[in-house]
Amino acid sequence: MEVIIAKPSGFCSGVAVTISKLQQALKNKKASTTIYCYNSPVHNTFVVRELEKKGLKVISSLEQITSSGTLAISAHGAAPHVLNTALKTGMKILDTTCPKVLRAQKQAKAMSLDGCRVFILGDENHPEVKGISGFCNNKTKVINIKKPLPQIDKSEKIGLVAQTTQSILDFKNICKAINIKTDNFYSVNTICLATQERQKAALELAKKVDLMLVIGDKKSANTKRLYELCKTKVETFQIQSINDLQNSWFDNINTVGITAGASTPKNIIDDVIKELSKN
Image (cartoon, rainbow, N blue to C red; front, top):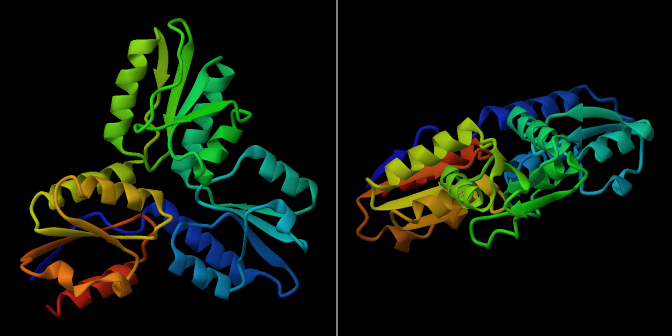
């Protein structure tokens, strides 16, 4: 059985930088201090588990902080009030927000200040989307391709940004739909290039193989998007590690394609390839 991996796959530069910053901070921290991270630093259970072993405390609310130390902001970013509140309590801030997320935050804020009603193409409960919304005083509307657009007046000024891991095709289709409803529409494609490159490579590979495996955490938005795209072309399974593989998937399969989310470590990808190569 031939195994082919889409390129690029796995860690993007933003995730790699976030992990590197956290590892360095954990290595240098004093024994009496704690490094907290507001929300999961990246959406991969294996990566987070290793950071927690080194002392990282992942929290979902500032109320969970019980001692002085450092508050790290995850790759997904956070709303301004989170940083401001933490600073007022004397916490140091380690901002590991992905630069592509920072761009989405700034674009949304600029649109809001310009008088736009800001729409965010994304997953409503995702930390990145909540953070972007916070830069507009939470006066935003989260939309997605599966639901009807909200009511829009013809003269209403609408601004659109996207969660950085969304599908570029969904973004283009949403733009077309909004354009019909208003004469004052402004959009900025804030989907990161790494996401677009991974989606394109995965789709191209999916057209050439008998089966696709998408490796990544169940909580990873970009992994979910890869899975949704690949399954439109060929039978596709999403796995987190070799433990999820099932032998029955590969009956009468000659070629297997592999892609991986932007927060999937190389060692997990290598383990899957090694396991499949036994067949």
